[in-house]
Image (cartoon, rainbow, N blue to C red; front, side, top):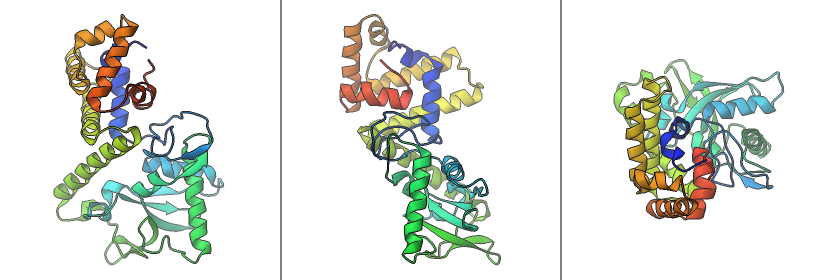
Length: 296
């Protein structure tokens, strides 16, 4: 695929939109480098699902369980009070059909779980989560980890109309029931934005400023696609190309030249890599293929 396609095709724009939402299943790579919904590599070793979503995690639990068990999501991370509490991670609540109980789980926790396989995949993540849970139960921790820092069993309190953690004592009520919904929503969205950028910075070894720009660009692309039913106007394509050029520190003329010359393409990759603070090899072999699905 020619490099000029990076700024001209809606396929890349859609990829950036997926990146911005970070809602796909755990993708490929080594520890800290999984993205999207596919897989990369087939070397046995340690992996994580750094961008796994709540829905994908629960689906993976159901996939590895007997067909008699069907867990489901009760509250997403943007619906729980604990998520909006300063200093806390993003927590969601599920009905865990295997144990017939409700359970609160940290999204950051499941994204950090290390498992061993030949590639990054959500089924291996779910299996490792269950193994950790079994070890905790066998050691006497029947309600999750001791302090409720990673996951815990919750009970529904009909007096307060909320789930309450057995170990932590935290309430996981629906955010819509709180008195300052707009403020709490803004805080959660801001925290999500920062964490998306932090995940990308860690996974692809780029600076936090570059990661923030990538997330901003992705969210802008997602909004463009949303208002146009997936088809970008010429004006949107031009605006998107301009933003991408600013991020990479290149001009449209350089991009077009790179589409005609291998040497110009090599020079362009090196220039962009230097601009975003990474190596040309990292940009070409990991960032473009894994984030954008672009093979040079």
